Amino acid sequence: MYQMVTEIRIYKLKSGRAGEFVKLFTEQSLPMLRRWKVNVVDYGISIIDPDSFYLIRGYENTERRKQSQDAFYGSEEWIKGPEKAIMDCIESYNTAVVENSILSIQKIE
Image (tube, rainbow, N blue to C red; front, side, top):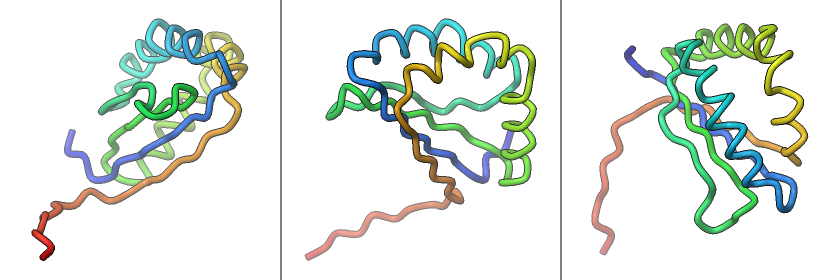
């Protein structure tokens, strides 16, 4: 899949729930995302905040992102599966969606 946009989601987890969240994510949510053909680029706990988790996903465009997420999060598999347990670990989250671009690093003098 040619990736044109990247979604970066940062979850602020409830204090002390990171271990439970990571277990639920890696054992239940991640396999589901893969079955649903979602391009998970990277994920993990922040190295500066043990109560923050990031999830980076790639999509062809913003329309495909919306279709994919509506289907996934509206599915019986998600709703009757890990949704409640996952959401119980999350205090809040923020999402940024950016167009992919080639970044050039220039030396600042």
